[in-house]
Image 1 (cartoon, helix red, strand yellow):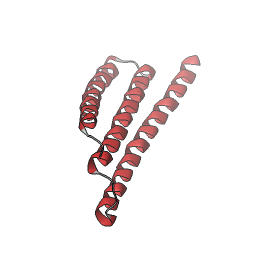
Image 2 (spheres, rainbow, N blue to C red):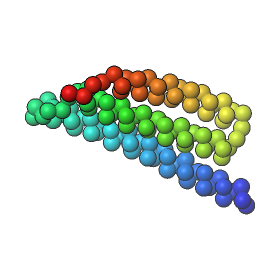
Image 3 (cartoon, rainbow, N blue to C red):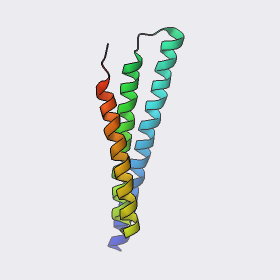
Length: 110
């Protein structure tokens, strides 16, 4: 009984972090696209570096939240296969996050 409740609670948190992560990445993409349209169509004063840095930050945080969801999912269903899968996912997402953060640091604001 306790394990079922724990599994349901962990499942709810996994879903929450996955939804928030996806929403954050989609929001960042939509915002970046809108700002690019404003730059191109209306000659607004946004710089591409500024837009890219904000979008990169959204992707980076979204990936971090997906790692949290993967770790919680592994806690919910601990098996060797799940542990290996989450390990591989964490490694790939950590590399992506590292290089995205390095890229974001390179951009200078106007």
